[in-house]
Length: 267
Image (cartoon, rainbow, N blue to C red; front, side, top):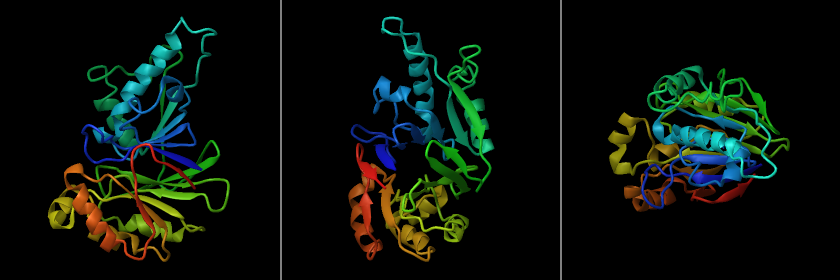
């Protein structure tokens, strides 16, 4: 399993990209920073997008990806012309997909590319049932609710090899049901991508906005009966240095890394 970090920041500033991860060159986990990170040819390879929740920093590039894909298909100067493609399938809990349809792809904010072009739309919606795995290429992916925005979820991803296991929380606050679900799986999750948005001194803000601090993150991952490798995302850039310092203490005893744009990880 190959994971490329397109964006992993909790802030949208020069040099900081919003959340998006590319799995095996064709599956997106969230879509906050896709079109500024991938070439048109790379965008054309995308087959599926798994969305954790409807917040704009995780969904905005669904819109621009759809626009680029339709323009790519219409480009008559390329020889030979690209063959028509199947729609990019957007996966998420039903309420999240409904929010994207109602508030983004609504012909007011952006065209509804689930019906454009007629007969061969660029996008398709595929609602997920919590904890029910599905196949996406060589991967098996299951959604599990987390405590963040309305109807937010994280994803558990398993590759064909026994050790190819990844859990991605997306944005999350304290989520005991998520960790209980991971603990009941018939395999150990080797890698966890999890957020640390705020420093410890801003714990009240983290709790109110359903995010984590380094201290809260440690409390969460200790719910597992084993110790996965931990990969940190979604740091708010004004606090990143302080968060880094606090993570060194909070994750003592764990193997962990701070994700950066354009990192590529092999699981």
